[in-house]
Length: 386
Ligand SMILES: *Cc1c(COP(=O)(O)O)cnc(C)c1O
Image 1: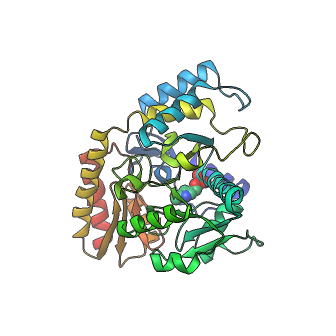
Image 2: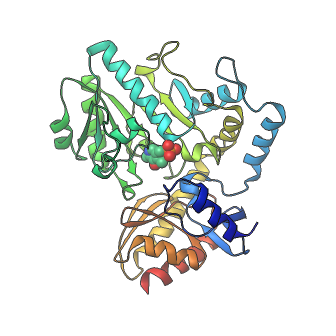
């Protein structure tokens, strides 16, 4: 198919919610993508942190294909081996006790919100959740409400009651805390708002604050989880023990999946009928997920840390760069240039990058090679320093 036909049909038939870059990718391998003209790109976006082992990843493909050849879907009225296996792998690796699977990050967070409210309501009549300013938790009404950015609280009123937005400090938390607070929800590294890791000292104090009051600590690791930061989950870098961890994006390796992991305290918060989904924990998505999680080994995580440090060191010195934030291969670049224009110019030169507010954001595959990184750095240098 001709790309101009794709652009025209998209304009005519797809809802106007995305300010798309004018490119359609046809195929790829690893960290390389090719458009309909055969032009090559280095992928530092991975479909927003999804294709963490790259495009067309053999091991993931084989796992998915094998599952498709046996059974493509069973609803959650019946047992499912891939679902059970993935849950077991996640629990063994994190210490979580139970997992609820949905199809996206927003759904994982919806589950966390429901779990926290039920936990608080059952015990204390508490139902308020504190989230942080500049957070991002998803696009459903509940997760939009949880998102601590005014820009997202337009058009769709009424939003939900019971959410408060704190500055990322204990003073901020105390300002929002009431005897109705049932949970605090955070991203250890805030992704969409500019790749900002939270202060670990703050996180440790927050953990203590929550424990003392039996308030649940929820870590939204939809973006920063699954090896992205050089840790299996970013909360592990901070040395805290959350009660609920949500994840999605990279977990499926390209298929839709979300997981809400319940730790000790709230493992039995749900009873029969309290929550559910038709597609969530689909066997094909879970089979892919198993092939991802099993490869997030300590060696790979160290490699991610090394590659992240290498990129950071090299980007810091580029002219017009004010600072580099992030952890591992989740990187935010603050520059004097307009981030969207940088992304556009990089694309023209064969490099795919993302933006996060006013920063350029890099989420390359964890398996990106040194040579690919160097090509990406060269293009970034040309575009940003010009
Ligand atoms: C992307 C993202 C979400 C939403 O995930 P979807 O799969 O798009 O619903 C939620 N939280 C964080 C931190 C994210 O980065």
